[in-house]
Amino acid sequence: MNTKQNPDSHAERRDNRKVTLRTLRRMRGRGEKAVFITAYDYPMARFADAAGVDMVLVGDSVANTTLGYRSTTCVDMEDMVRHSGAVTRAVERAFVIGDMPFMSYQQSDEAAVANAGRFVVAGCDAVKCEGGRRVAPRVRAMVDAGMVVMGHIGLTPQSLAQLGGYRVQGRTDDQVGSLREDIVALEEAGAQMVLLEAMPPEAGRLLRDSVDVPVYGIGAGPHVDGQLLILHDVIGMQDPAILRRPSFVKRYADVGAVVVEALRQYGADVRSGAFPAEERWYKGRE
Image (cartoon, rainbow, N blue to C red):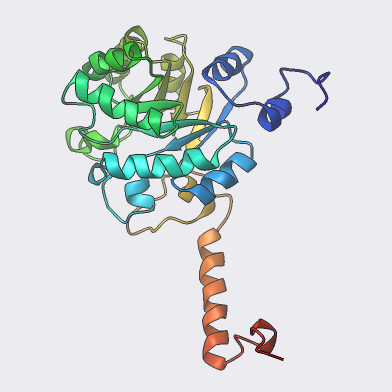
């Protein structure tokens, strides 16, 4: 390895160094955007790591993308720990965050610490929980237990009933003021990073500038420290009956169509007898 390369080079860090909390803080300080994507299994996490993403979220969106549920509240700790382990076994460089599912942290500090610890044992670098001021005590408990915690405010899918559905947040001065109180409370509780979801760019900028920790966005405009997207949205693998592609998502591939066409060709070959051709047969005794 060439040790004379610029240590601040994104390419060198991506190729040779494990992304850590210190890395992410330095990226914020340099104004370098972090690339953040979800992954839920070994193959996709392997691909994400090979592509050089900085952060991987094992999101509770596994409920919609992978398990066929219509709500993220349907997954539990067993689901999340199993998928987190698959991802961490695949990832060598990216910073991996485990998403704490509904009712895994809301009940008590003790439950929050115990369940967050299961993600750490599974190999995650950090955990994420939804909510602002009301979950600040849980964040403090997990941080005091030695864990890295990401907060999540704005549109919080585990609270859709309270929010009235999938609604953009931070559109009014009152909403922005409340969100600012939330993000400050999370930082004061020890959260080392925060995710903003579904809000106008002006709100994203104000919230990002209100704290000193890295702030990432999913549908929160360009003025944050990095961008998160759902992998299945990015590569065209979502089932529109379960997972609606939001307007802020850019699709970079249509993998679903490629898979369907490949299976159609396979089916045609099987039905016609073209598969297996003789070159695919095992040979018997000479």
